[in-house]
Amino acid sequence: ILQLQASKEDGNAAAPPPTASQIPTPISTSVKAPINPALNYVSLSSFSWDQDMDKVKIYVFLEGVEQERIQTDFKPLSFDVKFHDVKGKNYRCAVPKLNKEIVPEKCKVVVKPTRVIISLFKASKGDWPDLYSKEDKLKPNLDKEKDPMAGIMDLMKNMYEEGDDEMKRTIAKAWTDARSVKAEDALKSYR
Image 1: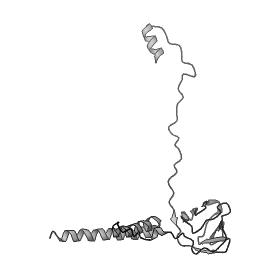
Image 2: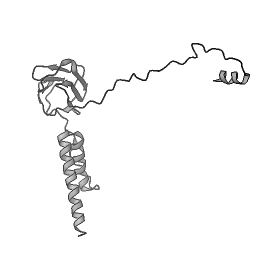
Image 3: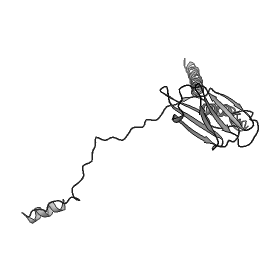
Image 4: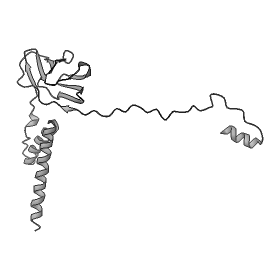
């Protein structure tokens, strides 16, 4: 642009031809980046489990799973196993808070024809009373200065946050129904 302005100012002087480094390279706009939509998972909350002193085995009854299409995330107090493209769907089996610690490096997933076995190796030998951690957060908070309904609301909130899809729908419906009943009662006083 400066060369063009300079040549116009000089009058009839011709601008030197542009060099190869001055010629802009065209950018192709027809090439698009691959689109990776967020994957949806069907939660597998129904499974069985067994244990011995060294490990916990979780049995997921699911056919058509391919070992290569499994994604695992083992942590000391949780696990998350995802099964991709099983008869056109993605499945997920996860426990966000285990009862006791596991050794993530030793944990494994084995695929059988009619089921998948998730083996969790215990960090310390012993018997687990339950697979899930039983924390005090499921108990209502009985703080005397707090609203008595607040403890129940905390309990419902925890159940909603940690529940499966069916639990969330049930709690949401109960909440909506309770709100609509309160609204109807308030309207009756105006009649």
